[in-house]
Length: 218
Image (cartoon, rainbow, N blue to C red; front, side):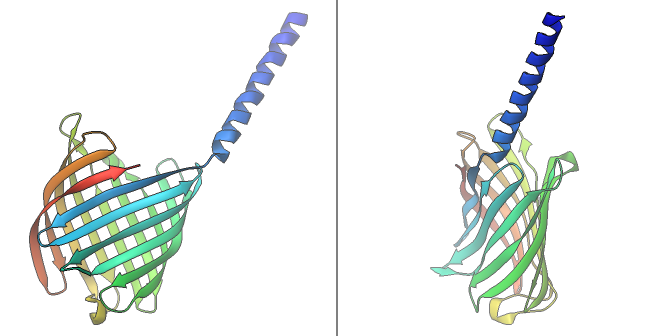
């Protein structure tokens, strides 16, 4: 009888220890900086950077993307949001976005969702509201492993606006679109040079450009 009691007590203590470990893990804080795109696009340069800090379920997230040409920053934006896990594969985000660069700056409230769609398709969908009406940004990418180090990544981004903003080169409806293909070589998981080709539609025309850059994370 004494042996049974000792066994039960030992199991209970082990369970409490596991629960304590889980709570400690949940309370821990960590961060990551992902430079997903840092590249040359013909005569211009572009970037797409994301960083976050927090726990398993709640994080502060910062995103920035844009383009420079002839020493001038063109359409660029920075976004700060609170990120909360909504399920196994999805996270919800609420925050604010600031547009800067060419033309007057614009401020937007942001509400979005980010995660993995079927077939491991990484997706983002964000709705924005501001003085210029409503806007939406949709992103999708997929990593196709050709070898253990060579990865082919199709990528698409769409930006939609309810109102045109000529001062910033923004048109109503489908304002700009990117469809691109990048082939990267992972020297390490954290460091990968790449090259590719992209088709960019924007107000004023379309461009087909070759790409070369780096993907890094810390």
